[in-house]
Image (cartoon, rainbow, N blue to C red; front, top):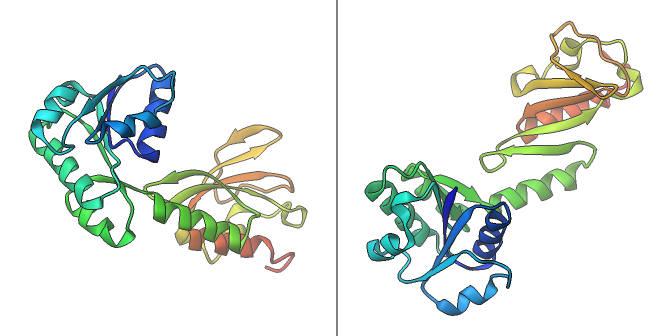
Length: 222
């Protein structure tokens, strides 16, 4: 696939190189040619120097035939302008991602209808989880971490109780995606019986998974 990474800072360099390592065709755009020195020596994608929100630069980079574009400069406003320009002039490009630095600017980026990746918000969310409780593990983040998939272990004292019993009081904030027992995953129903050592994969907000974790710690209390 053909991808264009606009901005060759730390994130841009990492993203471009990861895509290149996966055998994709990658073009990196930046207004300062010295920033291309960040790219590893074995990166053999193409680099384009030019104003990062210029239609001429977009043309030279080949935006019109790109499968996806990521705007990852260090300016939220610039990323918004780039993303909006590409959406307006190249509607055939289906994947346009923009990086968000300042959480206060996130609403502005989303107002453009852009797919926003906020490293600041995502990082803070992960640290919050680990500081509060490291007993459950995040396996997938949707959006910027507002809803995630978690793996949670069922303690022995919850054996022989049902899924509906476990979800009592927090069912509105939790969706059970799967139960893994003996290495085999299966879907569950409210009447499914839990066993100690089971692994639940749940979709939840942080508040939801925190409530579920507290429920698991209730011991034999109903």
